[in-house]
Image (cartoon, rainbow, N blue to C red; front, side, top):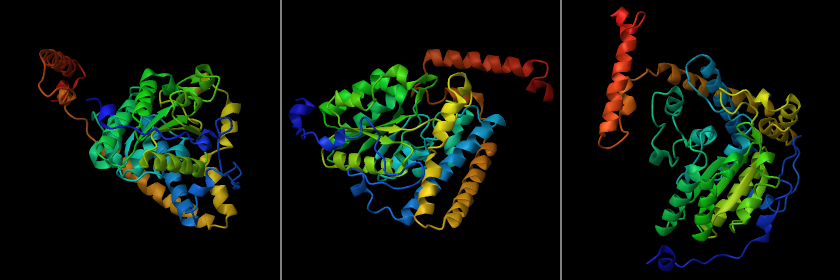
Length: 385
């Protein structure tokens, strides 16, 4: 008996409100920090007081500091690679704060904010980027999958997990994070087919940072990406991804819908990657300084800071609190990275298969011979024995 036959699905009627904002992104904060009304989002922000705003500001600041510290460590030879998230803090923190701990998150390689929110140790998170560990942390401990390098593959993982949760009778949701470029991948579209057909409690969060590596989003689509899921019968919300409150509210809407059996929702968070695609990229080759400057005026941290100041919050004290927290996290991160020693080269071949294959054993032997040849060469480690 098929899953559909075994568990009859009741497809809810489309909610016209969830088709709103597909032309102009929904927001509640202007770039100057002023608050404006939004009929759809406001009802989901009633509990956001000064204390909550302060927590969001600190979270955004910490993520930016993690990003800056890790990028600096690549330049100092301590990390091999780093994919910056500068500019995308609100899209990650706003959505992440709308989830509960048992909801499972499936991200790409740029969701550093979700790792921070889920309590991942900075040393664990950085081992992958130092090239000394095959995976960053225990996914089941944090309900957070390890970084997915294959573009868009995590959307399938999230959908499958959500389908399983529904079969188990759980009201947990799964969330897949990916960039605008991933929406052109087959995996994302296949995931939406299954999510729609089985009304899986999954949320697709597309961080549209305007570039798929060096290709602008206009090359992929002349229309809002949020229109794509509607073709699969999945409602979508298009929000200002630099407005942390708008992202928080939109994610709460999607979570509530998923928990109540309403099925999947797609959120397109319009944001901007301020830095390079990775620490090996030069974005000056494909975008102008004027473009970057225009997006810098929409900075998510500056926007929230201005809003706090306008509400009469003690902004100087909040800035100081954020600095103290940021300094502590940066110190922890740097200490963890510099303390990591390079493991024996043979560990590269560990845990590839439960039972090693002949091919793997041959590759290991070849690598052993390669390392031995380097150590025996003039200037190699063998000279210092």
